[in-house]
Image 1 (spheres, one colour):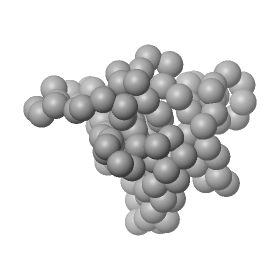
Image 2: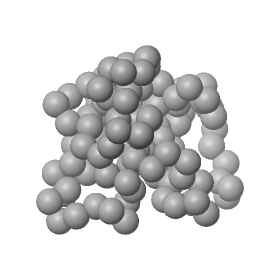
Image 3: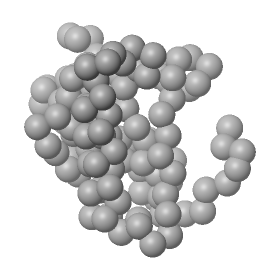
Length: 114
């Protein structure tokens, strides 16, 4: 998608602080962190959001979760825990319409979140 900011980051047209990368997933630091450790897990394939996922995207979701596990280990979040968030739609807080997960850690998370 030519106007998608995350597609531009994935293509290297916009700068980012890369944390981890595979053939299908890119993990970057969030530019506006909400926790001491805040990373974005981005599929390289453009999908608008959760409700746009198709049957053929099961492997993509699997990749996102496996990469999350690797980043959790790399960034030392496994002992104290973390929060994994997916926003969907305007009321869900989605501001960039490219599926992504927020990995937040480095401080206690409270409930309810929003």
